[in-house]
Amino acid sequence: MAKLEVEICGIKFRNPVMPAAGPPVWNGEAMKRCAEGGAGGLVSKTISVMAAQVPHPNMAEIPGGFLNTELWSELPPEQWIEREYAIAKETGLPLIISLGYTAKDIAQLAPKVRPYADALELSTHYIGDDPRPMMEAIQAAKEAVEVPVFVKFSPFRDVKVAALAAKEAGADGIVAINSFGPVMAIDIETGFPLMGSKEGYGWLSGQALKPLAVRCIFDIARTVDLPIIGVGGVFRGTDAIELMMAGAWAVQVCTAAILKGPSIFGKIAKEMEEWLDSHGYSSVEEVRGLALKRVQEQEYRLYPVPPLLDPERCTGCKLCEVSCVYGAIKVVDKKAVLEAEKCAGCGLCVTRCRPRALTLPRAAKFK
Ligand SMILES: Cc1cc2nc3c(=O)[nH]c(=O)nc-3n(C[C@H](O)[C@H](O)[C@H](O)COP(=O)(O)O)c2cc1C
Image (cartoon, rainbow, N blue to C red; front, side, top):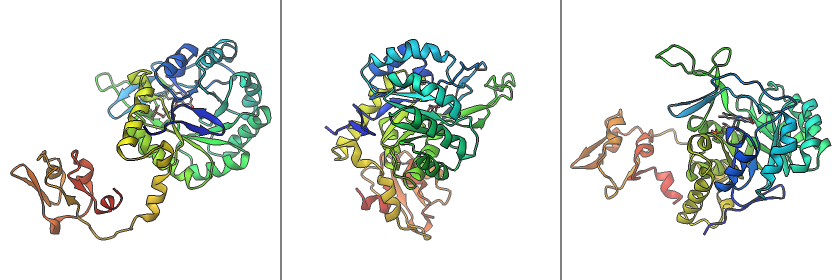
């Protein structure tokens, strides 16, 4: 069976799936449930020097995604230091403690959480576009503790610039990404925004966030040689594999753990193992950064190349036919028939074909 253990900055994780800072790790008992659910390590909800006062309502499921307007922990930092971290440590799993936000806050909090921390994760969510406050926060953490310091990026900044700045400031790793926003959704029965924040704004996470997370991880991985923990839209083992192919060493999960419960961590890890086994990989590390190589190998084609069609696999479902605006593919006698001369080579049918009867020639080249 494929090896799932990973080591990041000397910290050993039994598998690369852990909770992200958020409701599933809102206190010590919740973190214990994540460990029982199969997480490979723990990350605690972000704390700052004061308990947060959050607007209500602050979470909503939307089609393909999730909105929140939670801030950091509503529990006072003293409670975390006196009670919650010690409970999380009883699990025996590595504990990454999330702190926010300014250098002053970090200098105050880091020495106090140090007895429980295998690493720190600094949130940059509320400190603006200028990389300097982030660099100062990293430096404050590095001065206060000797454990690895990870910095968590929000996706609305240039992550390449931020990655270089984080490395220069001494960060040991990068966590990417936080939720994206502001965004908005409205309950059309009442006209009220789903979120109870002053403007009705929220922050997007879940499946809709995954392509943004993948791109950010990819950009960070090709900019700096720091370990990356990927986060954004991981619901299944295959999502985690995708983030790792972009360059992540491990993944964090928030929305899926809110919606499906803490057993999701072990389930994702098991699905990763099964996928790796079925694709001939002996360790999760073998897929790390694969897309960075593939992009180099990819031929930049400005001419259309029709897909390859394997009629044996075709189930006649017509998903290809209904969405081929060029009329190049039709289902005849329950089998797809391709008219190559009409094909614009857009590739859409390949991504819609569930039984993988359609493939792109470049995909065929690499198993
Ligand atoms: C309700 C909620 C609360 C969150 N709270 C925090 C937090 O306290 N600190 C933080 O760094 N990220 C926080 N996040 C962001 C998540 O850790 C994660 O980066 C983001 O949701 C993307 O991952 P996902 O698609 O798996 O949810 C929160 C997300 C949600 C949905």
